[in-house]
Length: 134
Image (cartoon, helix red, strand yellow):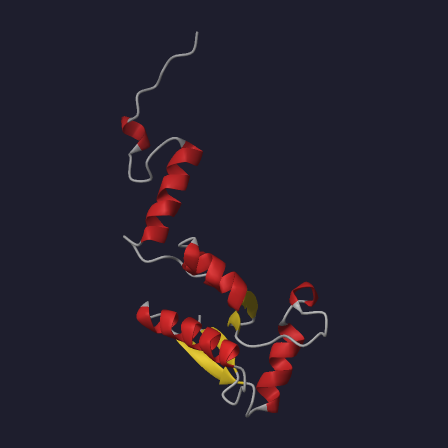
């Protein structure tokens, strides 16, 4: 699975440039494989991005601004949803990727599983005492 980040290399907006740098820099820091697809120099990239951003995620003018993030063909989100996922330590879930073992996100997922099931994922269920019903 390759994460696709749609960017505009020729953007005149410093806000867009900073958002693009934030996304790409974060993916590089985590060593997440990704492809940077330029919408400024490729009409095909621009059209693909515009057609594949879900309607409810498009701005009122109908033209989504970069960066837009996909996992292959699956839409992940824009910069704001990426930023929220980053703040919540949920970037791997946002990207549709399994978190690496030992990461904050993996530990959070493990805790949620323990709370949901009442047992630790590594605990052998055969060693769990059975309480007879009355």
